[in-house]
Length: 102
Length: 500
Image (cartoon, rainbow over all chains, first blue to last red; front, side):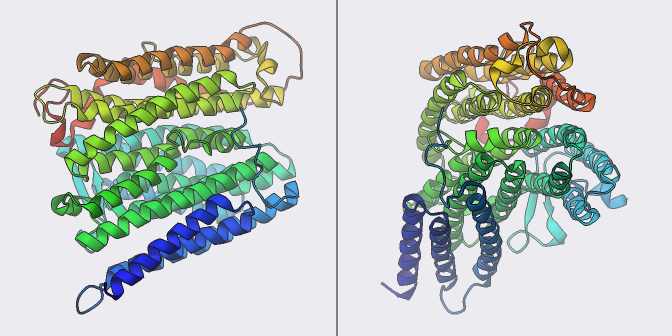
């Protein structure tokens, strides 16, 4: 087990923790934080994969930068939407009965 | 102008994105001066791209002249062009419809101001998905289209639309993360993101299997495959009607398109065959489950949204039907493939028309309660005709385009002896008759109760235009099959009875 594997495992672990949070946490802000932890895990994995042999591969770094930009703007929008939901419904969670109601 | 003629595909993304920026800067003024040129330019670029494809065959476009491992490549082949054609036809109809959809009140004008930039942005990113030949570029385009789609859903400002949009946003972001995890695993192992480059070096090993599993989960969520379809009905039913049309007709097809590309071009063959049967079972379950819930709805737009869940199931039935005949000396495989793509095309046109018609009826009555539709067929004969024509295509009755799609898939299921798939398709067709006649029955009865507000003629024409297209593609399907031939994978064996 070398250092790349350690980073990779940590990345997958973060992804798992984040996804668990997305599924379990009812509060919208906690869901969004969990989503960010999960994306942090994927980004960590990508950075770790860039280190192969002597010099690191620059392409995954560029990909991670793109991913971070997308993640930041998505989070900003999602937080604004969560605030709107709170103002409209008085709750900061998704209505549990409103989803799959038939 | 020479570059428009030589590389028309560039304008399919450049024009909508540019228009998004311009219409945002214009702040809602002079919308005709933006919308009409966009429709004209995109249609021209689309016609030129189609002409270039049928003239010189499938080709690769290197963006900015950078060659594949370093740059991003687009591929223009039959499958891509048919999906782009669907986007252009639906996009033009929805744009014209939206010119008349928004009212004159302050709140409505505020909504319209944000509608146009977001819609053009969504249009451009959808075209980018269908053009792309690079697995990371797909991630970027998917995120762009997902964010624009959620923002469009929440424009209607109802609490249900806000929570429906939020649920969709969280699921779409999670789906993209799964997909991105697969992308990084593939890049870490094979060192390239280009689809063709990857297909040359990919091997059957645990890492490829893991990547396939996570990317399939991601795309199944995006394409609302049963059992991860639950975000779709609240999101599509509560969005403004032109947005519902785009979401059901085009946005869900993005995830399906990527899944289809990966299945036919990237994954090792025995892995694809194993995955196909699983996807087929989920698709079959979606047909039954979606149709059942569509029959039980009491409101118009949730009914149409559940019908989308069911019709998307047919798309995933194409995988087991396609893989059974791979390499075989018959045309089963290409019939299933072409049938699946035709289902995407016919469902896109018919469903967009249905949602646009639903918007007209809601304008007329002020509510989308099914009981309130009584008597509207008499008052709005054009919209009733549009819904009937689109319904014919959705039910799979000739001469609708949906008939061609379902006939191709059904004949493969029967001639290859896969009776389970054949049975599900027949039951699904009958259930579609069941839920659509719940709309027609009420539209065709006479009653003068309830408020009535005359909707705009332009909205009615736009819905009728898409409904007529969904019949026209059923009457004349050969040009589409000719287009699909370009660059079709050799796995398909003989193409529709013709050796390529």
